[in-house]
Image (cartoon, rainbow, N blue to C red; front, side, top):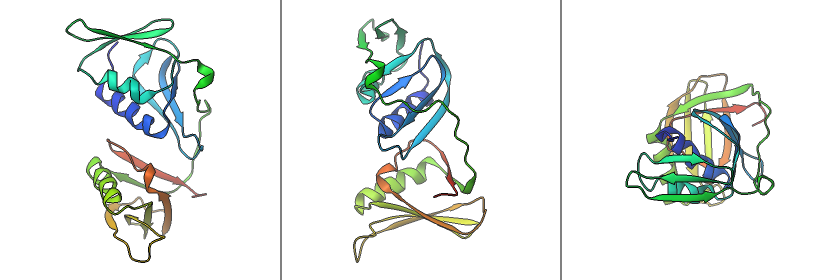
Length: 196
């Protein structure tokens, strides 16, 4: 089995949410942050043949991205990653009980607001948050236009960066989130529940 570039990108994002991951047999994976503030579920183009518990997802990703088009074989206790030159790497599974598992239930949200960010905007906001030592991502909208701003609300005078995007205007809204959660390498559609 080979993993697509899109699946590798999803796994990279999941590693930023939680360092470990339980991949069930099938094509749907889920993760949840340790503080339970982020939950994600995604259907992948690949179908995993068995349940796999990964304790250090970043470590596995380092192996998976060592070379392009590596073949992955899922054994009973480990997976074997083989590259084109014939080299192989055996990665042992973790005990499933040691890995944080996301709930298998579907989570239904009624969005208060919705907007789409492209990869360039996410990258710029993430870099600006680092430059400005920003701890907060603020989203303010008037129903048609959403402005995303990274800043530090605890500083009296601080650097900030803002970015405008189109909003599917439900109503005027505003929310703040920790900017440390701003990490993505692909387009993101953001939906905030009415409790936000």
